[in-house]
Length: 390
Image (tube, rainbow, N blue to C red):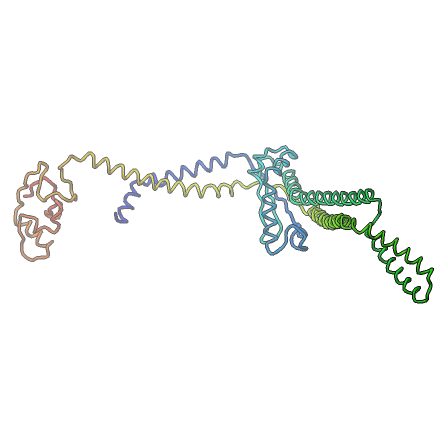
């Protein structure tokens, strides 16, 4: 088909191409205008202290702002937060999911929480509750985890200290490591005194020092085999003490983060405004009109195909139609051979079409410019099948 054919079909089916989009747009406009008036509000969340900074913070690095926005968006629409907000405000959870939307302000860490509903008095409470619950959900869990780590480390320290006390009670010795070290120092001093007394010939002093050296060595022999077990207990207590110090440091950082995420300090709620019906109508009507136009084009194509199929079924078998290939020239409705036309005018006409100055043959298809068509021009008019041209 040529472009003119498409235009001819479009003109014939213009009522479909225009009516369907107009009808769809009208229905969409009626639905928008019949809907209840909607109200919208925005809450702004600006907490720069939560992003970047020390490595101990939750959101650090080059993607800290995007990570914070993604985490806050997921938290604000999570089932737990939605249920908490629904409990706080009395709004259905489904309405909250449909009306809430979190938008990042540029490439910064600031956020906008938008809520749209048909109930004006619920906009501000929902925005306040959502920002508060989302921030608490993000950072209170860090405090809870850090608190649990501190409690676990404290329990380890307590258990290690108790084990050391039980060991000292069992072996009836207190702080054997320090006692062993002091005995070693004492033994070294006694041996030095023994040497000095032997040098000056003090026999009685040498004897006394020798007895003291023997007593110190006996204490070392008693404490020495027990000391490794005690040192293991000391190492466990030192490790638990170090873990406790790190856990307390993490708890301090988590508390600093949740303090920086105080909703009263980082959140502000704007005024509630009416949603413009014209803007909603424009956003709705244009896509609906485009979809209606596409549907109309498909419908026109279907109608044209259906009409051609019906026309082909109504045509009897073996009957030639104008312009159809395979039908011989000069055949009538019954298939009989058509009488030849007079040679004078026909020859002149065929001669002009064939580009010759003389006359052509009056019969046969060789003299016709389009031998495959069952058409003969006589005086500028097409020859109809089954008619004898005279």
